[in-house]
Amino acid sequence: MDEDPELFFPVGVAGPAAQEQQARAKEVCARCPVSGECLEYALGVGVTHGVWGGTNEEERRALNRRARRHARQASSGSRSEERSASHAASRWSDQRASR
Image (cartoon, rainbow, N blue to C red; front, side):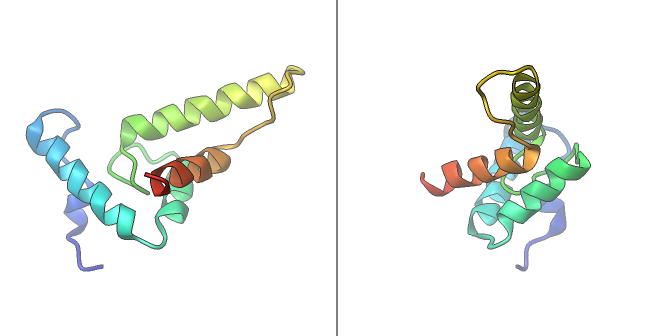
């Protein structure tokens, strides 16, 4: 892709300009064939800034919280299956693709 890498790293997460920049970056991610792998990488290494795999910082934090919650439930004998951050990334990608 011939996109400016700065597109994926807005200066902030609030305000109309930052939100518009995130939206443009997510549009690029939606067309990218490695978006899922990109998101898995970001979740795996704990990237805290920028748009990765079609997600912003807040969305990745939510995916990681969900994965940790499911892992705790699974280890405490709950019927819920353990879901890693990678599994959460796959589900996120599937949900985005079905839109």
